[in-house]
Length: 138
Image 1 (cartoon, helix red, strand yellow):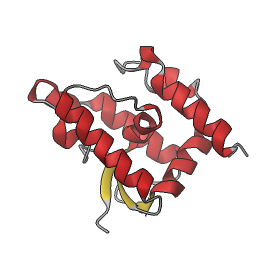
Image 2: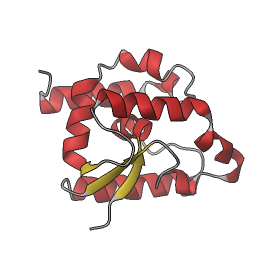
Image 3: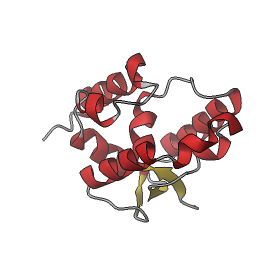
Image 4: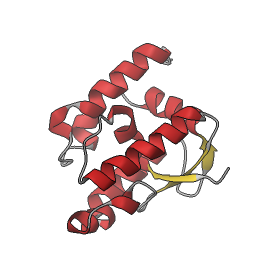
């Protein structure tokens, strides 16, 4: 199976995704990627700190966002926190567990301070729910 490229901060977004996004095409693309990964937990994920498979469907009105410094900084912070670097490949279920272990929901208030989705609380709630479901807190 071909690895799915996912940028660091999208690992957090994936935990709280609720079918909202920048456009219908963006939402469907992200939903399809997450369905594929969730259906095959051992699927390989290529971790990146740049535009990824999710960004591929970003509408042109938001295209600059994908290459701005802020998302790149979040990507690198997330990858560092889970002990990975851009270019690493690992199974989806392993990466998801590493993200849940590495972050508390409150961490997102600082890490994602300028993200337009932060005020909705989706990612914090998704992270909290996953922590409780998986009981992965060490």
